[in-house]
Length: 274
Image 1 (tube, rainbow, N blue to C red):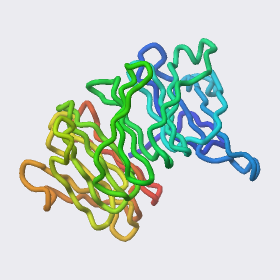
Image 2 (tube, one colour; image 1 turned 60 degrees about the vertical axis):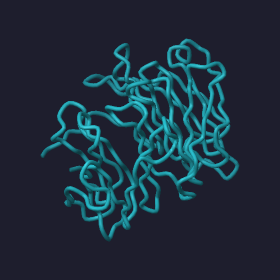
Image 3 (tube, one colour; image 1 turned 120 degrees about the vertical axis):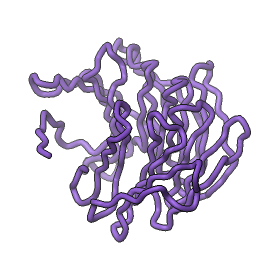
Image 4 (tube, rainbow, N blue to C red; image 1 turned 180 degrees about the vertical axis):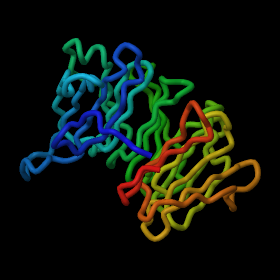
């Protein structure tokens, strides 16, 4: 399959989030992950909003905001809220329309004590934001409240959270992946795991089937066993329904096409997108 590079932004090591808003569908948020070699004393970060102007000129910088800490994760909700998970454990919230209008001051939520590793707005209830940190803590934040309210899931693992994914069909179900290979599927009504999956090779990313709420895929970041497992939670939580191969090194990320459940995309350390 041939691919064409449309545009690029140089000298940026960052987390990214594409705008889900129809008002500006070509907008992308970038949250700085490192200093880019500026210096030892540069611990801060930047939130940049770009208009990628696809098919036109070079990307246009719409807004830059300085932050005290760097970004560990980034997410953009259909309500227009940009959430930045920071290296100090705080979560910063900006309303994108206010940000572009000149209001740069974020709402700060103290939900964690260590670096945020994953953020996810709920696709069915976009005022709900989940966050996971390097110590395994998972928080659920209601951004519709003023100030936002936070609840913490009981601990299922003290190992770093690698990815959080809300179920696409059932509002109170959420999957949490940890670096040691544990994936806990939580029932938030009961506030306890509904089931657990274990992958000895570790889990770098997870994704729910967009139309089947009991189908989940897990990806391995292990160079020795870079596989994707498809799980049917109705059938088994110990044996995957299928195992997919194709990468020669660890898998970095994957996503399930929201418009066609037969399509799954993954990227790996082998510089391949499959």
